[in-house]
Amino acid sequence: MGKISKVVTIGVIFFSLLACAQERTFSDEALNDSLIGLNGDTVTFQSILKAHEGNMVLLDIWASWCKDCVVGMPKVKELQKEFPDMTVVFISLDKDEASWKKGIERFNIEEGSHFWAKDGWKSELFQAIDLDWIPRYMVLDAQGNITLYKAIKASDKAIIEQLKENRS
Image 1 (spheres, rainbow, N blue to C red):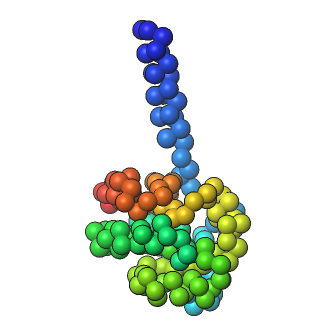
Image 2 (cartoon, one colour):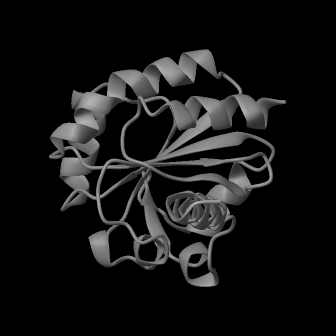
């Protein structure tokens, strides 16, 4: 085996291991983080996951001021129609509660579960998942395990692949 072939083989193995190393569960800090529901109640992220136990979940971290987030909304709505057995949990990074609620109405995204991260980028949940860009999409199986750790476009084929895989 030539030197270049060895380097390529080692590179492929290394990147394959990295791909398999994605997180599968949420840390205790993330699970205990508090979010605000549409009715104004404070809930933990863990209670949100528990409420959707038994269903696939698409986690959509967004903000009404985020152009890329808004551009992805029609695709998220398509995914909701294509996968009616999936729940979308929207978590907003809007600066205040009023902007978040206005964004839900303005972009007509009433379907799904909606929460606001009052601590913004500094929330324990976002620190735990290394949130560095929005939108951020994550796919969870019916047991709440993370099957897709990071996608930044609603049109990412990995989202559909994971939803199909989780369905079976």
